[in-house]
Image (cartoon, rainbow, N blue to C red; front, side, top):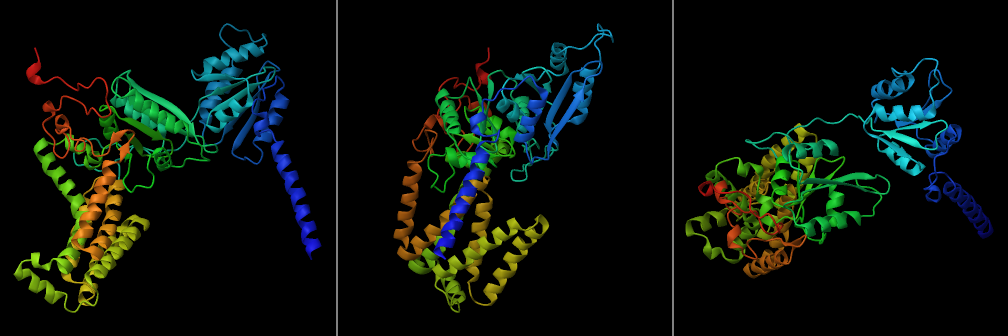
Amino acid sequence: MRRYFQSGNEIFTKNHKKKVSSKLNQPNSGNESRKKIKGNLKDNHKYLKQVFENCDDIDFRKIKISDSNITILTVFVDGLVNEDMLNRDVIKALSNHAPNETYSKKISKETVRERLFTTSTEVEEKTQFNELINDILAGQTAVIVDGLDKGFTIDLREWESRGIEEPANEQSIKGPREGFTETIRFNTAQLRRRLKTRDFKIQHLKVGRQTKTDIAVTYCENIADPKVIEEVLNRVNKIDIDGVLESSYIQELIEERSISIFPEILDTERPDKVVGHLLEGKVAILTDNTPFALIVPVTMIEFFHTPEDYYNRYIFTIVQRLLRFSSFFVATCLPSLYILLTTFHYELIPVDIIFAAAQAREEVPFPPILEVVLIESMVEFLREASLRLPGPIGQTIGIVGALVIGDAAVDAELISPALVIFTAATMLGSFAIPNYSMASAVRLLRFPLLLMTGAFGGFGFVITWIIIAVHLCNFYSFGIPFLQPVAPLKASEQRDTIYRTPLRWMRKRPTGSVNKNVRRQKGVEEED
């Protein structure tokens, strides 16, 4: 038996080595990455056929130009190219005679080359196959002319895409209704339409060895700090991964502290929000195939701001922001305060309320800590179920499930009615936070607070908050303190933090991400 298995392994190893060696000798291996295009169309066609073996979506078309012996080969990805434009603007243009040419005149190879450059403004010459193949996979059309030792790529890209719609996660009553889509070119166009200045820069990069995902790093050159721009570009360029399917890949790979529950980078679907941050010296990163843009550097306060804060009068904005910042403490502290009051410091409860609460808890079989953990876990199950189910069903499960389970638990005397009210207020507090990443961090944050409070009472509650505060004070986003301008305190930048002053008073940009052109506007009273 041992001989049999050993011989079988040897056979497998030999066959495996043969397969590996055959793959290494294929034309798409790294050994022939610098292979040049030949002047023989037959050899070029054979090579490309080997490269795109078993790729049925790659379309090869040989076309003979009329009144000549010249044959051209077009190669493109079916579904990524507008074939009507290919036939009309390229093939037909090459076949027709120019006004100054006679029908008896034979079309030369150089004439074909000249006509290719008149078919479109985006025609590039390629001398190496790896450049040609990368452009084909990116959606461009390759044209190879028999007799020419070079290829040409023409940008005729067109594919089905989702139209511009209102962001589902960041809806607003007042303001633009446009959101990003999955096509990066549409997203950069929306930013360019709002920033009509030559100082607005867009640098394109490709990330992912297999996916070669397009990444756009955008910033205002006259406002953003060059050190921040350089740091962002360096971190993105250092990414070495097989594929990038969504902007969260980029977000996690360029963060300094991936183990922290607090997000270091702000994500958004709104172009107006991105432009607002660009005008404050931030850098935005757009990723192809995702409608989310990443903004760096950011502070914790900016996760509670919305574009609508600047579209409404500042008095209403002050009230709304106070509610949002209050929701942070409600969502994190309310369950812990329930345990603190009912277990350790019940003397703080008014006498009229404490008797009613004690009577309601008389038949509950669980201690307060277990009671709270049970109901909070059930709420998280309902939240996750409502997200994964189809839209109409998910909303029904979220609302009806909470009502039915809460009412049944109270009737079964498993939880007290007061805890249901505390849990409902906690849920509302987490829903009031406008950013999903920060809201998720807040939901997770309340569980260590619960456990520490249940174990050590008020001492555990205070110690946990001290640990959180120390962590936040040592937390940075691309060199900017996460709690700025509160810690370290900058009195001159308090006009757009927890509250917002009138726009005419906000004349300077935040200095954290701006080292030049700090002046935002000139006051009305300063006009000549």
